[in-house]
Image (cartoon, rainbow, N blue to C red; front, side, top):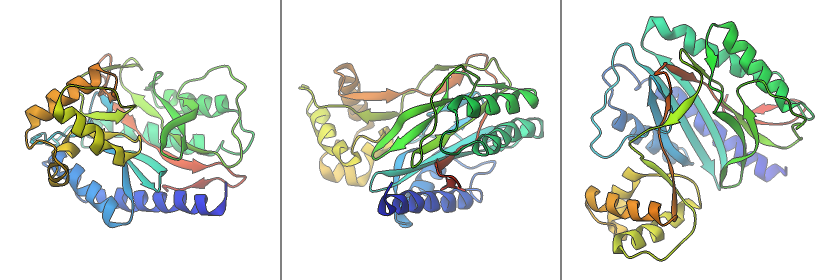
Amino acid sequence: MDDEIKEKYIKAGKIASQVKEESRKIVKVGSRLLEIAETLERMIKEKGGQPAFPLNLSLNELAAHYTPYKGDETEIKKGDVIKIDMGVHVDGYVADTAYTISFSEAHEKLSEASKQALENAIAVVKPGALISDISSKIEETILGYGFNPVSNLTGHGLENYHLHAEPQIPNVKFQGTKRLSEGQTIAIEPFATTGAGRIKETEPILIFMFIKPRPVRNQDARKIIEYVQRYNGLPFAERWLTSSEAIGFGLPDSLFKIRIALKELREKGVIYDYAPLKEIANGFVSQHEHTVIVEEEPIVTTR
């Protein structure tokens, strides 16, 4: 990795870390998820970055991929466990980080389990380290707290404008020979749950990613294809298509029309959707995540 690229990864991580710290002031009981998302995404831009994906605000049994929609009235309540997962990019070089806040004393240990699993996993990172050793450390830590790791969610590599690159870093033990390489950038993200340790897709689907253009009939769908090119293949939110900028570009000032257009784009394979991920036994879920550049002394960009 050359120095210019490394500096962009580090800058993205610094912005993410700053916004994460400031987010703690506004993520509280009574806060609306929509206001949190819009505020933090705006902060990312004000600090010189761009959102690498829509801010994820996943409550309780939802593990990931929930972002508020236009008009979303959902508020944080006492007893909730919320995962705040944010991505920042600088010229496509991504920092991916997450943390959990428990508004229930009963689930503070659950949050601590994924947090400690992350720290223990980072301690294993170095060039040549077996990915399976990282996964084993995550599982052992979470089980040690009395919870289950989520087995069908993984950490991942990060590349330029590529959010989920190789290698995959499972949260459970496996037999494997793949090793980390110097200069790789990875996101390690343990998930711990009070449930069965697996997730499934649910609704509503609010996050999408452009794949490739195809012929579509709907005029609004064609305009969306044009508009989302600006994200260079990174995920976008339904609500981003209802912004004043999007309307000024020519998208309809109608959430109903946007949803009709998105439906056609999904059916034609123009966009990929990221459904919210729910724990199969409705167990509460916690998550912590950092981005790490693999070196002899690893650089945790989002610390």
